[in-house]
Image (cartoon, rainbow, N blue to C red; front, top):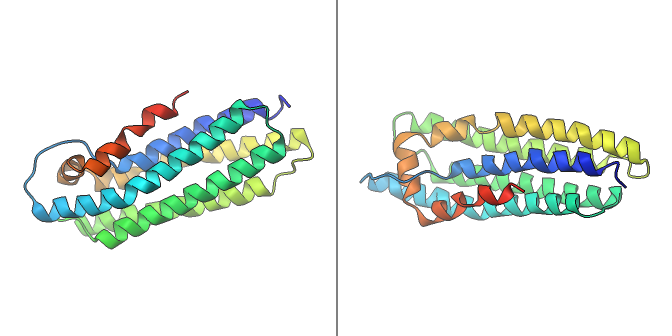
Length: 196
């Protein structure tokens, strides 16, 4: 079964980039007395943290499947579920940011809207990857490996392009307010565990 292993490794590596993206929604410490903004940050962090964990678990599942001597059918099943979980998680993050409203900062409304659009876009992209994985031919090892290669390429693009609006949302005061939330601190610890 060596055919799919190196490719699925690539998939796992590309995916770990995606996990970092999810955790981009976690600010770094700072001090600020903007009560409204702190309340906003708390809502967002509490809504995002379980989703970040879901994305991390999906990553772990794909990496585990990579490490095992898995058949194409097993890889397909795991990857499809992981992509669906990621799609759901990004959609939920988008809903969280939407529900929280605009942060109380300059251009807050635009930043919020851009972040929601981006998160929903990521959700759609991962749903599309799930469909691509499900459509792969698991009976033909070489074809399956080629299909996975294409998916890994897509993932790579996703992990590189996906977090501009989130970074913008978190600049300055918003990042400081998020950095003070326990739930954001808890979520931001995770990226290091995906390198392996």
